[in-house]
Length: 469
Image 1 (spheres, rainbow, N blue to C red):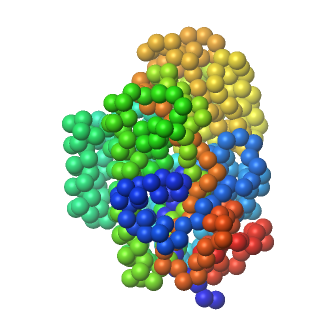
Image 2 (spheres, rainbow, N blue to C red):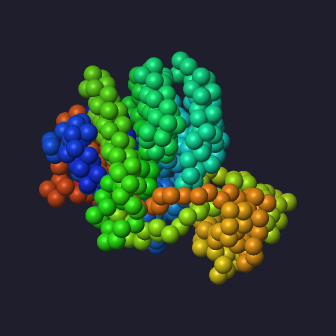
Image 3 (cartoon, rainbow, N blue to C red):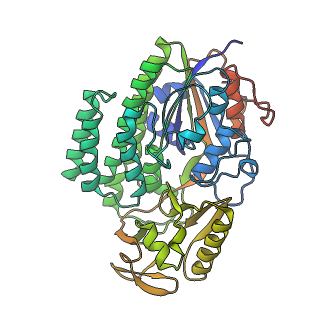
């Protein structure tokens, strides 16, 4: 069967509007050309969901090709049902070689990549362990996991800088270019001097991943290579208001805050555009199709909380669980998650049900949180009332935050971007791509359309896609 070899870049939560506006500024010429050439389709989250869309859920739906009611994956650590494999798992088991960098739901490798032809695999930053293929990328993955588990709305600049330096040295010869090292150095110096917001340092992870991906892509040349990035989404969540203040009916931030941060989203898209341009050149030299996809998008927040001054993050799950009266004789396994989530694998459904009940009881009327359970995995989405710099309300009483395994962070930005159903698919160097008349497709079309492009038989549970890549 004829098939195309494909490179897929998963850009989290990016809508057409942001791409169009940054391209119109002259700062994303490659993306602008794709838009001008009508190579961009809007994807739409078509299924009915029980709550607001969430990235781990929408990527699971997009990449399995089935709705949430079937796969039931909402949080990063939820069990992945074998009955509904991700499209790249289907490809790897169907005589197609596959390479992965950071794509969601690719951990643990021992389960998610146990069968099939995987030329390389560096799982997502919510992985349960630091396993990589090849193993020499383990040190870098350990850094990814540490930084993710420390995630909050506060950028710990000094901590990140102290971790990144040794990691870069350990990665010598593993794909990091001299140009990227120099860019990282300039970025750190600009942030330290206050010339750019310190949060921009977070984008350094994308620069490193880009080089690693290109090196592995060049060395291994799999039939399908997939990489995920969240750096544009992170900028949009924090700084949508700075780029689009007119989207809001009232003034939430002062003019000087807007002036300082209005460049953050364009800078993130510029970084993406430079990377895509390099990839497209490689794809054309090596007869590959380049596909860029987001599983949903972002728009302006409906409910911007400009009065929130502090954020609370669980940094010691064992101390936190002890503080809310959970029996630690069988301490659950902490799985990767992003604040304000805590995901715990309990080892049995019975233990998970007990933990679910206790956390729900503690939450009561005192906290803004939610408890979810899938099989033996419990995810707590938490929100705690801050009394002062050292004290929070927990289980209806004032407690010392540090003793309860918590950190209190001052914040000066809020989530002014919110999730919307419309994402994008952009395609370059594909002889078979066809633009739908209305420029929109169901996001459940993506997985079967990818298998069609790869010349792999679709599973019976896939729909016949309208999308033709």
